[in-house]
Length: 318
Ligand code: GDP
Ligand code: ZN
Image (cartoon, rainbow, N blue to C red; front, side, top):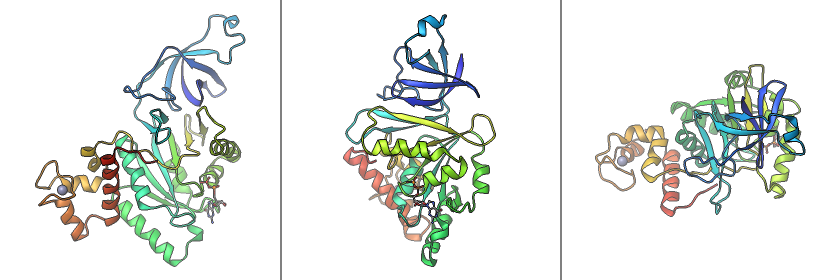
């Protein structure tokens, strides 16, 4: 049988075959993703083949029923380190149609460095990314100007931006349309309104997520837990919440590659004198010239440098 993985708790996977038909499964044999050790070789969003026992007798007394035998090829996936020190990694989701970052100009402040790390990670994993600016009902003139500047900057780079108030249901229509098919991964600092947002889209979904994230914060969850929230009217449309995750690890970035994930820096970088220019100290660097002329935003360049620096130190930020 073939189905979609909609939930993962420890070594158990819930595989959905039809709207009212899903099976609890475990992995048969070992699965490895590009030789990276993962806590969950199979992730929510994966399409898998699984076997059911010939007789119900065989499954008696087991917490699972089926055995996953094969993962179908993924269009993409996003993986993150479980923690700074850990060698283990966790796949947040596979076959993602898009990733949304919920951003607040204030209450709490989302830094441009954080936004850019998210966007760079999405580029690295070939996942379409968009920014959702929340709490627009709360901003004063000064904060509104900041919001406007950010939207201008990121739309200028080709990223879709939405301005909403999840609490008051403002500006939600075009966003609902945008996420109306496929799998959407949701991320953002704690406090930006993720639960409020999800609850506005799927009433009743928040309780569950809150329980999960609280368990996370208290360290109760030693096993991993991820779940897709069914959304909307189209089939196979889901939201993936990422509770307890402060950010995206910049895993799999290579020094040479970092500029690839900053669209405008990559584009302009083609005109640098040295083909392997890092845009830091080299003469005749088109990116540094762009920075002086104002065609490259200072905030973007700063974020680029911060990721380069991480790579130099060989450390992974969360
Ligand atoms: P999460 O940590 O990202 O899940 O954030 P929550 O959904 O728990 O929201 C954190 C706080 O921000 C709560 O007090 C919400 O009521 C508030 N909040 C969420 N969305 C909005 C919004 O659009 N406008 C305003 N003014 N407050 C919001
Ligand atoms: Zn350069």
